[in-house]
Structures are given as C-alpha cells and as structure tokens.
Length: 347
Image (tube, rainbow, N blue to C red; front, side):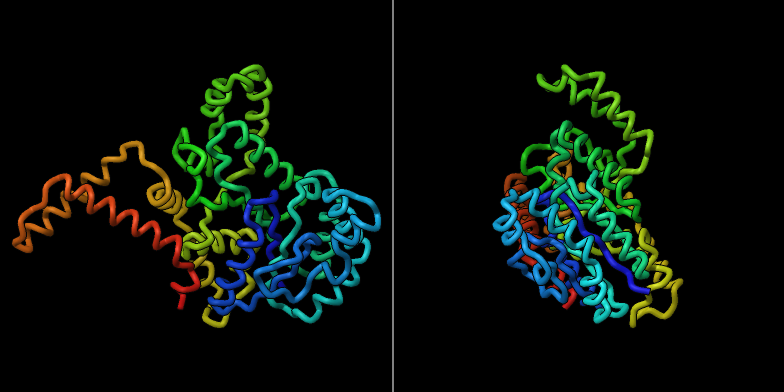
C-alpha cells in the first residue's frame, strides 16, 4: 500500500524547498522516498526527480503554442495531465510501494474551484495511494490580520475541494516576524480558536473597518466549520520537520500501515507519532518570536551566569557585561540554527 504527500500552497510558500528537505529527511530515516514533479513551470529543481510532468508537457511550450499566459498555461497543463493519467500511472509502476512526495503547482485556482487536480488525485486514490495533502502558507501572513483571514479562507476552501486528509503548515516560521510583531501569541494562529479577538485588529485598519459586518461573517464561517489548524515548520530545524512528519503520518494513516526497517511494531510507530502539540508551539514561540517581556530571559540567564562564575571562584561580572555576553551568545546560537541543516544533525 503506497503512501504519498501532495504538497500544495501559493507561490513563494516554499514548496520546492520543502520537498527537497523532506526527501533528505525521510531517506535519512530509512524511508525509501521518491519525488514526483507535477509543476510544469518547475524546470530547475534542487532535488532528484524520478518522474516529472515536463516529460509530458511544459508550461513554456504551452504558452508559446496556445498563446496563453502563465496561469492559464498551468491550468491547461494540469487538465492535460488529468486527461492523460495513463502516462503517470505507467511511470508510477516503477516506484512500487515507495513513499512519494508530489510537488504540485502553486496556482490556487487548481485547489479552490478548478477540478483538474481533484481528478488527478482521485485517480491516484483508485490506484491504491493513501494521500495526505500538505498545504504550505508563508507564516509572515500572520502579522497582518486581513492576510491571515484570507489564508484561513484559502485553507478551508482547499480542504473542502480536495476532500483529503489535510495538514496545514505555517512555513518559514523562523522568519515569521520579518514584517512585524505578532499582535497575539503563536498558539492563537495555530489553534484558530476564537477569531473575535482578531476582528479588533481588522477594525483598526482604515480600509478594513468599513467591512466590519463582512469581517465578522467570515470569522464566524471559519469557526463554524472548525476544520482549519496549523503546524509550524522551519525546514532547517530537525525537530520542526519531525513534528510535521508525525502530523502527516497520523493524518494519512502511515503510522498504522507503513513500517520502516528500523521499526519493530505498529505500536512503536504510533507511539513515535504522538506529538506534544502545545509544547511544540511554545518551543517555536520561545525560539523564533519576540517575548512580551524581552528582559525576562536576559535576567534569568544573568542570574545563572553569575552563579556559575561565583562557583568557579571568579569575580562576578557586572550587569552590562552579562547582558552583552548573553546577547552575543543568543545571536551566535540563532545563526548556527540557520546555517546547520537537519541533514547534518542526522549524520
């Protein structure tokens, strides 16, 4: 029984980087993994592909021959693939029961109202593939209330359209505050629990406050379905990738039917997939986001620093020395996390 991830998301959300990182990570844990490129615009890829839609049709040829723009060209390519699934089925036979990662196009129309991708995925399910949709969105959208609401609506419509086990992921979480601080803690955005708090920030916007009733109706709609929630991901962080893999394995059922060479039983696999979700969000909050009290950790580290110096018999440093030492150490640790990938940590 083959399992597969269907990686989707708007342009710039990090799909190709995710597929490359996931390929390395899964093969590093002895799960035989292959990548299938279904994006006709992806001509330069950082990962090895066993199957690529470019062998069947390319966006460049489609635009040139049919006089279409980029969006129309990609939709045509996916409809062409949906009508010629025999080609893909024949290619997939060589993959056997290996784990598959499908790198899909970024045009959101394919996942909200066009039925080409749904037809392709339905055909794959008939072939026996257990699919799990991984929907990536850029986490910096959380810093803008209006953009965050649009991301929620996109995620909800995609879930309803594709009708697959679904994991929504906030990608690039290490850069989440690049465009501003979050007005609320991270778990508010991952839980999607009570959006009434978000309406206040929407109504403070000079443009959005004109649509207060519409904002309230959209928030109520999302809450009524109660389907949308997010995992967080920094693709260079081994622990972050591990949490996402666990969520995908649970959603797609891999924990009950995809034992790896290193596993002894399904029970061990299921136990390994258990995730301390609240602790994970808190960990991300502490590592990548600014705190409400930015001096709290500095003061705590300063006390610990002073105790260590006193125990060694050295003269305790001044508060300014401690602050500079701690600041320098924190910057160095953050730089190290960005430079060192999870593959290096696995080795």
